Length: 315
Length: 322
Image 1 (tube, each protein chain N blue to C red):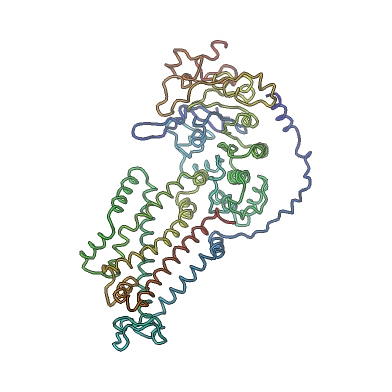
Image 2 (cartoon, rainbow over the protein chains, first blue to last red):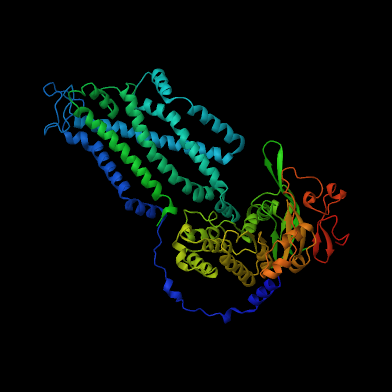
């Protein structure tokens, strides 16, 4: 203990002037890196991820064709041509024709509109509703949180097929709107849980406490700390949810609960093509390929986004 | 009385655990701090040091008792007065990895408090950030970095710069060194002492590292299970510990000289710390105290002055010599 005393006293008795810097040039560590914002940095890291960036480009190409494809084809998607039924791909009909002689190139992109709209709109609606619901539950905590989360659990325990059938029976329609309602009715529950968990964790983080101690207002804390630290997770959840919705729609249309003719979607196209599959496999190939490509691209993009939006992984 | 910058009177902070149970994290602590002094607060894990510190800067509302900051009751502060208190009383956190927002650059983290309390142009802010970074021994370049690019010691320096940015008078240092390497610990403690000399800061220095507390503190308080068992000046406490718990703690400090370490008598404590949920009646240390008598099981001992400036909460101390 004596030794300790002495060292302490010695340290205090040496004035700062007696120290001199040996061998370090202070100017050697001059600022080199420019100021980069969070989103700019995330975008830079996403571009560096080759797989995710390729997925993004595939998606952009798909969306381009979904918007302009039907016009490029030169055919109406519901135009029946009795002279050209069940044709294979040719210069005239790029993807061939179906059993009513309708041009499949036009139909695939027209169908893509329905599928993509359901995918994106469904995921966005579910995320917005789920984020608000989860945020409220986490913010109030206690009893409110308990009750709100029990409701979520009850909703999650109902198979969505039952809900879809019930809703289409009640509303007596099988339109895009009905499908959206049916899919998002329970779809937001997952995101609500995710956001609630994240918010609860953030609430007790030391940097949130530090902001409190600095006198930052609650609104600013939510805007500057809570939301930015949740938004990346929500974006990733959306990109992972989109293929889920597209596939659900395809599945429902395939079993006949979804989009009805003459309107069509990738699932409905695949369902129709399945009857001719033995003789004309190309009719199934294109819608199935589109479903697979979209789902794969969204999943890979989501993976890349998750890495890009996490500053801890920054190199 | 007026000379104290921070005063806690019979401070209690209880947490509800489960249905009908309360966890008495802080139970009747009295603290008086003069301007410019450093009060060390030591004790084992879970004894309420951190809760005590956080209640002092109003991160938690006290369950009962009062905290006076410059003679004003902290719990009654509203609006402008509360804002002024938020500027004057700051806290440095234990975990430098959790205390910086991963989505913000160091510059943004440091300016956060300035935005609340000062009206400054962007240029002034940038200058102040550079000045603060320099003051805590970091290169100005770090302003554009994110927290995860920094080492633990560097992050803790940023935490200090964030607290200093609002020009506080009182800083609670909540175990600022326990997450750091030993060599870095010394740097941070010396930095804190240097800043105190330059800016006349008042510190509540919470730690479980007894030698570090001794190095930085003027007075030291020892906490056990939510209350203060002994409070004395630095040298009085380390050279003449009176409470049996303090004696055991002090004897656990390793000696530098191996010979000395062998000669030293270790005071070993038997048993476990009782749970702070429904703590035992009377002296809370009695289950581990070899001097415990009947009275210890009945009455909670009060802090009594046994020498000038040396306070002990024990029924047996000062009455018998042992």
